[in-house]
Image (cartoon, rainbow, N blue to C red; front, side, top):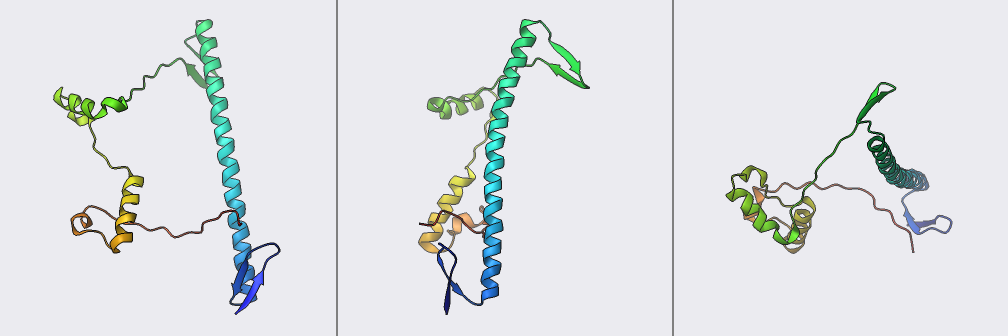
Length: 153
C-alpha cells in the first residue's frame, strides 16, 4: 500500500490516487464550510449584542420622551415589559412540590436532558454493547455518523 503525503500534512494510505484527490477536495470543502459556520456564528453573537444595545437605547429614549408607541416605515414600535421567572436552584425540588400542592401540577414537568441521557446510554453501551431490558421500551437510539476535524499535531 502506497503512502501519500500532502504538503505538511499527515500520511494517508492510498487505495488509488484519484480517490485521495477526491478525499482532499471534500476535506477542503468541509473545512471551508466549518470555518464559514464559525464566522457566521461569531457575526450572529455580535449582531445580538448590537440589537441588545439598540433596544435599550430606543427603550430609554421612548420612556424619556413619553412616547409609548409609534409607527415608522410600516412598523409599529411599542414599549413592552416581560417578566422572566426561574426557580431558585437551592429550593427547586421543594418548589416543584409546592406548585403541585397549591393546585398547579400542570406546571411541573419532569425531564431528563437529552445530553445527559445520551452520555448515560453511551456508558451503558460501552459496558455491555446493549441497553438493559428495563430501558429498551423507553429509549430510542439514533447514531449520526460524520467527520470530526481538529488541528493536527
